[in-house]
Structure formats: structure tokens, C-alpha cells
Image (cartoon, rainbow, N blue to C red; front, side, top):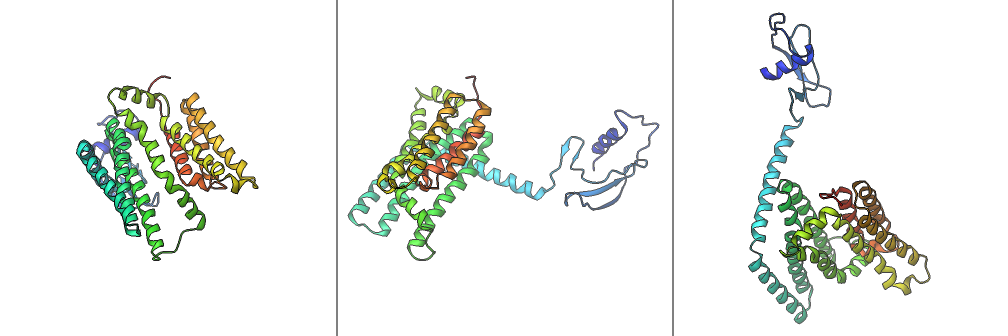
Length: 334
């Protein structure tokens, strides 16, 4: 314990200022041993008259000492790495005028090779190139826009993005290994959902990239920023897309659902999701968006009963929209 911290502690014990002539203070550590409180801090006995404050002194003199300094160092190092990754990709995004033509040319070559020589290798190559291009476009249009608006949150945004990318790539790798017989096959329901979702992935991706692509145009950029400050745009937009995907299953496969009550259940869930999106648009207030966001997450879980989670994509979009609506804070008066 430092001298200044000890003085602050004595002030708190004796109240306010104290007469140095009347109180002689001798700061002398008598004992240091592991404390049972929290299992992390140490007990310090301080000789100041008869006062012996013991226990957790993680906050002394207005300074906070974390109970896990090694964890603090690890977090600080990761934030530095995440900041470097974010700034590196931002530098790459500034060169998008020559990067994306190369990627699009590679996508064309991969599609041509798939049409000429259809095989598992050509299909994997085609999907990999397309997925790389779409992920880079999504990160540039959505993630980099958030980083530019709030540079202090770079570490958190980069971490969330990397976790999402790792999950997607890991799932695709798992499917490839299961097809090759190296891993057990996923459940039949999940396979059916993936089979129905694959044809819709390009359209859903383009629908997600279209608003930020238009918002990046200098003419519309001020209106785009004002719109997201006044309304929880991504919560509304993802809820609409998720509701349409949930409705897609009973409407597309109506003959299969015709003799089952699941057709009404799927239509009820889809229409309810669209209704929640309308509530977000009509009442863009902090308290109402929190409640609506929670209901969107609940509907995303319920959508797996009868609609395969809106062919998987619908439930994911509802969770993302609900999370954004819950965390949204208005930045301008509505």
C-alpha cells in the first residue's frame, strides 16, 4: 500500500481532515496472508492505533485494483491485437476499388469451373470464393462503418465479428468433413434446413448488404446516419427479413403442411415477427425496443418448431434483430 493510499484510508476511518499532532500514524505491514473473501485479495493489517482493516482492499483511495491482474493484461493485449486487426482491415477496405474487382473475377472463374467440371472440389472452391467475397463485403459495409463511428469500440466489434466468422467457417468445415465421412452426420432436421437455406443465402446476403451499400453513397450518407440514430434500423430490417423467411416455409411447402396445423403455426410466427418489426418502427423508444427485442429472440427459438427456424436463416436474423433492438440507444430526438 502506498503512502497516499494509506492517508486516504485513515481519512475515511477518522472522518475528514485529522490533526497530525494528535494522531501519530505508523504504517507498518504486520501480516500478509491470503484472504478468504473472494479467494483472491490479501489481508493487510495496518498499525494505526488499534485500527486493523482487513479483507478486500481492491478499491483504496479512488483507485481500482482488479482482482485478476493476469486477466487484465491478457485483455489489454487482445484489445491491442483487435485494434491492429480492425485498423488493418480498414486500410484494406480503403483499397476496395482494386481488391473487389479481383475477388469478383475470381468468383466468375470459380462459377465457370463449377459449371464445366462439377465435382465436390469445384463446389467447395466456388463456395469458398463466394463466401470470402461476401464476408469481406459485409465486414466492410457494416462492421467498418460501426468502427468509424465509434473507434473506441474497435476491440469489442472486431472480437464479435471474428467469433461470428469462426462459427460460420467451423460449421462449413464440419459439413465438409461429415460429407467426407470423417465426422458423424448432423441431425436430419438440420440437414434439411441447410438444404433449404443454401439457395436463399445469396438473396439474403444481398438484401443485408443493400442498405449500407446505398448508405455509403455520399448523397445518402447523412440521411443513413440520421435514420439509424432515430430508429433501430437493423432491428427492424432483420426482423422483417426473419419474418419473411419464417413465412417462406409454410407458403413454399404448403402441400406438405396442408393437412397439418403447422401451417397456421408457421404463419402465426411469421406474422408476429413482422408485427414486432412494425412496433419497433412506430415506437422507437428505449423501453419499448428492449421488450420487443426480447420477444424477437423468443420467436426465433419458437420458429424451430414447424419451420426449421425459418430455414435456419430466419431464426438467426431474428436473434440479431432482437439483440440490436435491445441494445439500441437513440442518438437524436424522434
